[in-house]
Image 1 (cartoon, rainbow, N blue to C red):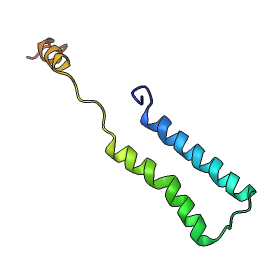
Image 2 (image 1 turned 180 degrees about the horizontal axis):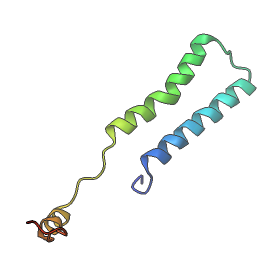
Image 3 (image 1 turned 180 degrees about the vertical axis):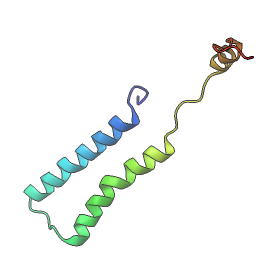
Length: 78
């Protein structure tokens, strides 16, 4: 499902979703206290930050490793 989505795009969509939810809560009359603002900031920044640290690039397959080993060097050694 998420194979074709980059980490940056997913983080950006998360920020956009949280901003829209925040705007809706303000329009609907939610309390704008310091504690509520801290919770909104935590909800906005914590999940994408964890995702960017934990989500790793895919590991190379055996075929990719063998292909890289069998290729001659482009620069001749002297």
